[in-house]
Image 1: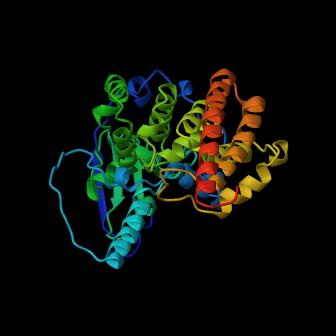
Image 2: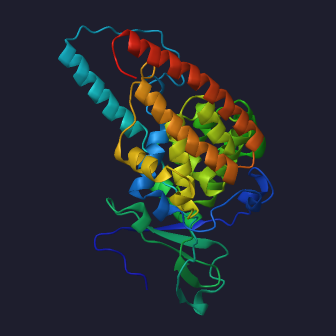
Length: 372
């Protein structure tokens, strides 16, 4: 017999047998095998300190984007008179709030469930045509630890499968925003319309509420969104959101970083380009020594924080640092990228523009009495 915790209340619930349509028949495509999936548990790698630091830096904390109005347009403006110290304190608090809002959803492996059979009682076979579910609804127990078992019509008593546990927990201890049944927005046609409209952040936010990170549905939805973002080069739509890190990790894991690297070059995010290369090499055990100068740059990006507010014009030192970034990126493109033509054209255009900026910056320094 099942022993419940002391003080627990035992609730018996009879669930009528229903023949629901399997999730894979209506979600996105006929089978989850059409999606890129993690071949092993990515959790330990994703949670490493160096990987988290790289992903946070590539996310790029931009306060105006983090605190933008997302749904309801509001033209109200609030003005405050502050001293310099009060302004600095307000900025520090805003940065702290922004960092909490940019906390990335974890990337873990799909859960493999195998409900444990507790007993088999043949005397109960045929007692009922419906299965009975028994739920311990004691307050204060974590939903993942709550005792939920089901008695099958053949007399078998076993632990409830995950879908049953999730449904019962949502009935008795509902989570805000989560529905008992999967929202229709995740059906193939509706999801496709949302992606074509560019509502990537909305879809991913809703997926985080409706599913747990270890559910197969969550993996399929996020993989679909990430691939659509990559195909349409819409990286900036997720930049400075909590989903940019998992997107970057997904692309680096599956060796699909060419378009993202191209986007970083065009936007003059060369430090992020180096961080992307470091992440890619770490995931695929590529030695940093394969690229001249990468060891030093890797130590630099891991040891320093990116500038929160970028100046309108770069200094001579910053331009020289960009030249070192560019040299390593060129080596990586030559050895590991498949879209070499587009990347090399972007690199050539960047080099030409960088040479002009370098010449201008050195001229201004000389005019102000500085040395080159």
